[in-house]
Length: 96
Image 1 (cartoon, rainbow, N blue to C red):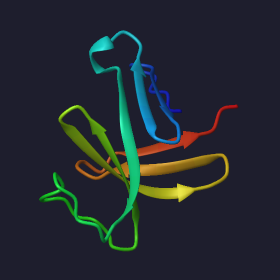
Image 2 (image 1 turned 135 degrees about the vertical axis):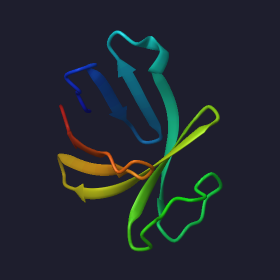
Image 3 (image 1 turned 180 degrees about the vertical axis):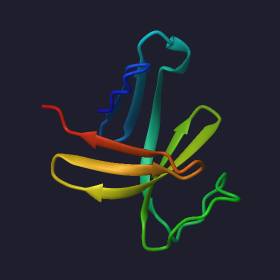
């Protein structure tokens, strides 16, 4: 789950569902499917992007859009990843 103080987004990731919810901007609320894949796999829609062969990535499909994230640190209660197109860094902590 991530919280951005400016827009207060909430990101919830379950076994196969990626959910974005933003306070004050329903136009970007979304539930999408996601999957993990190795950096050696070439995917449709990833033309022009650079993938590290030894890294693991997340592909998120939302309507006609596909987003790619490189996984970084993974721990029992936290992880982080990077948005491949822009290099944005996201950090998450499990809330129970």
